[in-house]
Length: 82
Picture 1 (cartoon, one colour):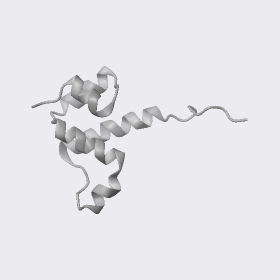
Picture 2 (cartoon, one colour):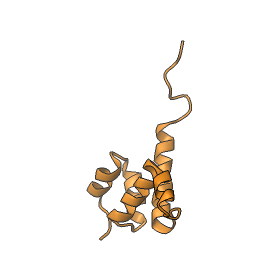
Picture 3 (tube, rainbow, N blue to C red):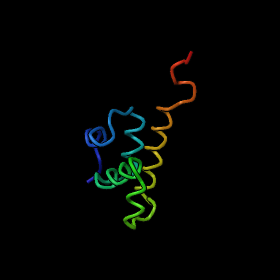
């Protein structure tokens, strides 16, 4: 069954409508989204357990989620020091 907005927000947190649409457009399942999210959370245990790098829909989801993380940590967003 394809993902819906509620499932996406439950898995990755509050995201904008464009990101929700991108994720839904992949045609991924809840399990695939959870796997992509797990890769981003900590890929070392997955590699150690023999899992291959994400590909297909999981890989596309991982790319979308990585872009989200990069947007959250933009250069110059840190509090000024001094």
